[in-house]
Length: 373
Image 1 (cartoon, helix red, strand yellow):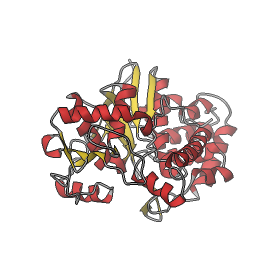
Image 2 (tube, rainbow, N blue to C red; image 1 turned 90 degrees about the vertical axis):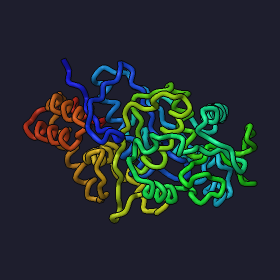
Image 3 (tube, one colour; image 1 turned 60 degrees about the horizontal axis):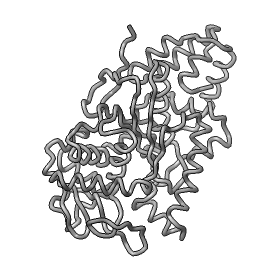
């Protein structure tokens, strides 16, 4: 009998068995398309690509939904700066993102829904949260009432001060005078005069940041999903708020397993659009083949936070050449499977492939489990 896969669960703070049914439902938070895909994006989505590849190798079918946040503060701000329609900006950047991910060899998403496609679902979802008594109306908007949900903090395990600090740093606006509690978060908000707006029972406006993912995950995959992923920077506030509003609306568990990938740093600082310290995938692909870029990224364990170094690419190129020189075959494939089943231990898997290749055994099958063709 095959041993179960084991993965770190953020909410349980431990590596635990991951034993879904034959069809595995997964949701990963997608990009806000106002700039090109960077290494941080690639690191996150390669993590869930590797997971899907091993699950399929184990005989599962995977359904991985990756949303597109095509309406929120960031994209509206960038569209305003550029003097373009926010949907035109989103379409252009999504085309670039999809092209980069396709070249890197990511499996196609089961579904890639846009936030603006889900306004009726979002409105219905907010109605459910209001009816459950976990939300209130104020100032033309709708807010989630954190005090009404005792399990708030179940994923991040943060104290109140830490939550308030992160909320302020991530657009949560704790100083909003319409809030009953600074930690309460927006489900629906009035639109500024130059922003898109939709009619609702609570007035004209647009969705808050967190609500789209709950509505889309439920629409595409059902009330409870097997695994929810994203970068560690989304644990709070995004995923904490997402879980709270979802479980408040349905009364059922939202996610069975929370999985988060670590961040990529450049110059000792998190790589992010807001800081501008980005390495774009499209730029790397102009100089290096996709297999080299992919191998340089997956060589680091998905939960680690690590520093990008340009020397990682020449090293990955040499490694890939060694693997190719060994020719076709399934050398080290059992070791690679065991490593991936042990919390996606890619460094261990790669070391096993290295050993097999230098010993003259073909490793194409083993490399294929990592998506390296």
